[in-house]
Image (cartoon, rainbow, N blue to C red; front, side, top):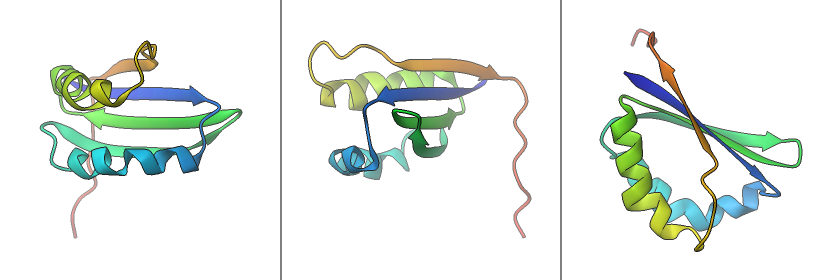
Length: 91
């Protein structure tokens, strides 16, 4: 089942995203990745992504994201199941 992953980072800004550019370049080819969007929120930065399966996101997080986080960084991801996903028709 598809999942939506919501991450809210207090105190983060768009500038903080530049250090993640090498990781994000790999994201487009990640198994099960559908989309990502991010933008400002009150007091920080919000990122959302959609994955085909929870296992795909878990693998990505454990193998790519987590090794790039400072030690002791708490998990800030909330994962929601998406039983219905509709894609736009390609014209």
